[in-house]
Structures are given as C-alpha cells and as structure tokens.
Image 1: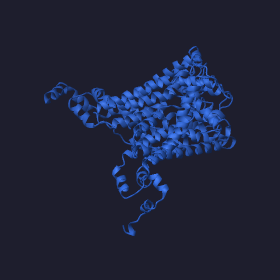
Image 2: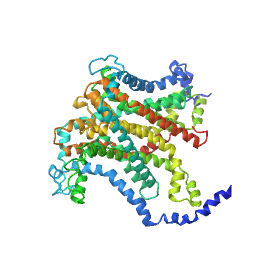
Image 3: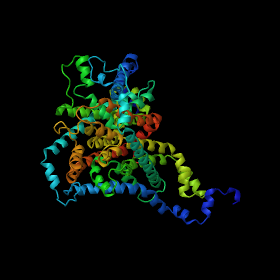
Image 4: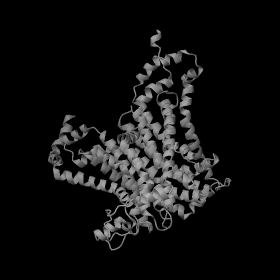
Length: 299
Length: 318
C-alpha cells in the first residue's frame, strides 16, 4: 500500500522545483494580480461609465474629440435636477421602496413559519413539502407572467402596487424558506427540548428561542428579498400600466426612453439613483449577502 | 411549585385558555405555520402554472375568454419562423453565456482563492454587477453599445487606431446577438465566482499537500483534486444559471427589445411581445410553455449532480 504511494512521488520528483517557483514575485504578479485587475476593471467599468455620464453636461457627452470621455471637465447636476423635478422619479422611488418592503415583510413571515414547521415540527411528509418549495424556486417568472397577468386582473389588482407585493413572494418565499431551514438546522434541538420540558408552548419556543438565534439568517433572507424585489422587472412591467405606479427599473425604461434622441445623461442619472439604495444596503450587509448566497448554494 | 418560579409561560400553560391550547396542538400548528407560504405559492405560482398550460391550448386574447383549440397554437408555432429564431437564439444565448460565465467565473474564483491584501473588499466589489438591478446595468450597456458614442468604439478607433469606423453593436443581427451575450456574461460572472469560491474553500488543504508531496503539477492538482471536488456545486450552480439564462428577459428587453429585425428575441421576450403587448394571451402562453421541456432537462441535470454528490461522500449524506 505505502509502496504504491511512494512510487509516483519518486517518478515525479523533478516536478517539485516547479511548484516551489510558483510563489516567486513576478509569476505571482502575472498569474494573479494582472488577471484580477482586468476582472475588476471590466466588472466595474459600466458603473464608472454610468456615474460619469450622469454628471456630464450634454455638450461633453456628445463630443469626444474635444473632451476626454473618461473624465468630466465641468460636472453638472442638471440631469439629476431634471430627474427629481421634471419627472415622477421621487414617486417611482417611493413605490419601489413600498413594494420591496411590503413583499419582503410578507415573505419573511410566511417563510419563517414554513421553515419552522418543516424543520422543527417534523411531521410525515415534511421533506416532501420542503422539496416542493425548492422546486417552486426553479419555476422562472418568464413562464408565469402571462397567466399571472390574468389572475391579477381577476382579483382586480391590475395596475396596483399591491399586486406586486402579493406576487413577489412567489420567488422570495422559496428562497427564504430554503435559507431559513438551513439556519434552523444549525440551532441545537436540545434548547427547544429544554423549553418544552419547562412547559413552554411551541409558539413561545419559536418566539423566545428559535427566532433570536436565527437573527443572522433572518437578516440574510430579508436583505436578499429586498434586493430581489427592488430588481424585479418582468412582473412590474406586465402588471403596472399607469406612469405613477411604476417601479424604478420599469419607469426608467418606459417613461424616460422617449423619441429617437435618448437623454443619456438623465437615463444614466436615473440608473445611478435607482442602483444606489441597493448598493448602499449591500455595502452595509456584505457579509450577510455572501453568506446567504453561498449558503443557499451549499444547502 | 412556589409562586416565585412562575414565569409568564407557565401561567399561560396553567390557564385553561383554549386559544393557547389550540395553538399548542401540533397538527393545528403545522397547518397554521404552513398556511401562509403554501397559500401564497398555490394562488400565485401553482395555479398560474396550471392556468398557463391551459391558456396555451386556448385562443384567449386580452378581454375575451378563449375556447379550447387543442394543439393549434403549438402547430402554428412550429410553422412560425420567428419562434424557431427565438429557440435558436435562446439555445445559443444560454450555451455561449453559460460557457463564458463558468470559464471566467471559475477562473475568478481560483484567483480569489489565493491570499492577498484587501481580499474581502475585492470580493465585495466583485458582487456589485449582480446586486445592481439588471435593467439599470443593461441601460449602461446600451449606452456603451451606442452606435455613435460607444466608448469601446472610441477606444478602438481614436485611441488605439485598430479600426477606421465605429462598431455597429446593435444595428445588425450577429453583432447584436453577441453584444447581448457579453452583457449577460458580465452580469453572471460574480454569482458564479462567489458560489464556486465557497465551494473551493471547503476543499481540504491536506489534499493539495498530499498531491504536492506526490509531485503533482499545478494542472494535475486542478484536474484531479479541484475539479472532481467541485463537481457537485458546479452542477447545482450551473443548473440555476442555465434555467435563469434560458428564461432571461430583462437584458434583451432593455437593450434591443428583440431587434434588429427580430434577430435577438429570446422565448421570454417573444412571449411578452405576443402575449402582453400583442394581446394574444393564448399564443404567448404557448411560447412560454414551450420553454418547459428545456427547464425540465436542466432540473434533471441538477438531480444527477446531487446524486453524484451522494455517491462521492458515502451513503450518509443529508
């Protein structure tokens, strides 16, 4: 047994210096820092371009010969001013916020209860319900939006933000439930048993013991849901008709893109302002995002 | 029991409050806990899914209840060159974009798996394209792909002098197709890279040490340790990626709306154009339903990926 392991080691001994050289400075630079630099440059460039365009006066925007396009000579707030005072942009932001918060709250409540029932109240068939909710996550909105539009009309919710608040949980609940099942699994069952012995009811256990311990999971699920509902597009496009009730992504595309000459400054300013809330949110909770993203994949 | 040890919950338990007792009755509690989630999902997911399949067999239009027409919608689609175009581009889009995302994303994950300063900051920055609303970054790409003021054309023509004329990114079919694929890859890299990085970090370093002692080269270590160990997570991430790339809507709708000359329609955008914009709900639903076989295929792919994981780690896997 040991012989067979030692044999290839001798045979490939000449490869060993190769691995030693791996960490030498220049090689490290070429193999790690250079490609990493390119990745970061390409991944961030569109945002830089978005930001710089939103502060450029139109004269610079359309003239690359006299102005270096990568920099602004005379920054202006005109585009942002136009957006805030000549369009319904503040209202769109407000609607988006409302929809995002409403659907996040709704799906957090529903998925916490569901995850608790599936993971902790174990009953016959609970794994199948878990599997069913997992499968629901695999149904993409692109298949559902046409029949959902008719359902929304049937309920009399067409053109109302309430429709979005009720519909977004279809993709938020499966994700959150899945994430929270993982978190609940990591909480020792003994804690709940102790409480049961002490005569606590199940709901008290959930409120006093399980939920406080699952706070990181709840935060992860919450910020993830908020981001997903902020970014949602196809349902908002299909169910909302009147200009005032649109969410930011839909409104920018349908209300600001007018005629043949695009107002690139205003468009990019709108995109920048629409991205900022999630970007700020994200920067505050980076670790939760990464853990929920990777946690969901690993589960 | 002395009075001093009475806490709130024991008081509640002792009082014959029927409501508290009802909520402590396990079957009732299970039903109550599952009701909101199952209710929402049945009304807004399962029911529409069934309704969508039913609509695909009717000639419903907006404002008029349709009648059952059998396979007529599908028969029509089979003769419709636009539908075949959309199928072709959906498959091409998914195949090329998935390949690009995974090649570049895996590379980025391997790079991030090294030790260097400011690693967590870098990891946070890299996720940005995935966090920002797709439509808004798509608008930035639209502006980058502008026929007259494209920054890429500027770089190639005026700075590097590699070309004489601006590139017409979105004006003709093939450049438009690949421009959209590039934007999709750009958006998908962070998700793939960060998920795979999580997988990479679970591989025990002792495996690499053992391989190093045995004299395995960097390529051999990648081929015989990293890659097989990453297979399960690769399969899952890839299934998700394939499903959501194939059914993508936002990027194409925001940048080209299916143009020029309907050359960049995906099945989802075609379904929207026919179903919502055109009002032919039945036909739109048929186009959406025609995506299902592809998605089932992708899910089976995931299932076999998971099965392999069980086989790798022994039988006692959750």
